[in-house]
Image (cartoon, rainbow, N blue to C red; front, side):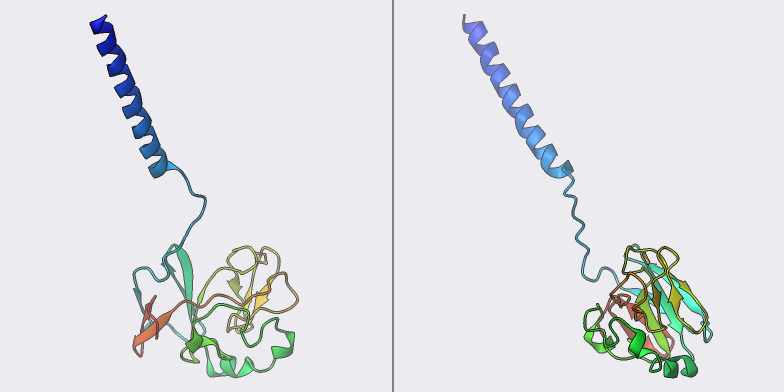
Length: 177
Ligand code: FES
């Protein structure tokens, strides 16, 4: 009888321990389904000394493609010409640091920095020479400041990340200007 009582108590303790471990494992392993990105992440240095005018460099930062484009003075001047066709010409409904909420959407007119993902469903747009970017998925198009044209399904401009210049030809992604 005594032996049976001890066995019973041991079984109860094992069951309680297993239950507690299972609960702990569930807390660790349970997928939340929500991805909360770190607001900045580790900064990334991008060298621009060998980036010629008109060329686009893509770097990966926080798992996303980030574009750095060196625009010509002609391309920058042309940004004023088509604002009637843009969905958000003043970037009031779009995401960028306050220091980049201007016509060229950048700290410096010649250097454009943006997350290279379409704001419709996240495809990768392609550079179309001096005319802008075209998304191959559903034909949203953006000018060379990442401002979206009304004609396509995307309604927000490309996202501009935080960055600052460390030198004329060196910028740091992920740090406010
Ligand atoms: Fe770019 Fe749809 S994902 S237009």
